[in-house]
Length: 84
Image (cartoon, rainbow, N blue to C red):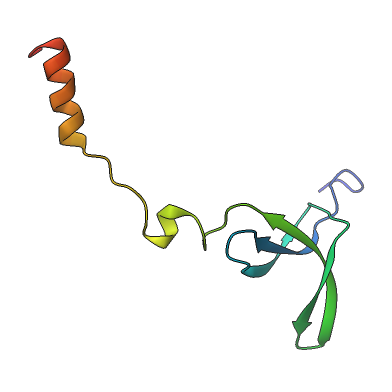
């Protein structure tokens, strides 16, 4: 990789705004807010980024996703445009 052309890639804590769950990962995103995170070496301070949706609150991952009635959509199409 070429030196001095890549953004800073560092540990960041993301927090779900709906559930409050947090996870530590690496990102190029930055924030003024910080949080203390427990590590084996002791508490560390990381940037905190609050996001609207994570796998803890997304309907697909929580099992609350709505399933579309595909057969109903086909029948609606046939009623509207005839049997093509």
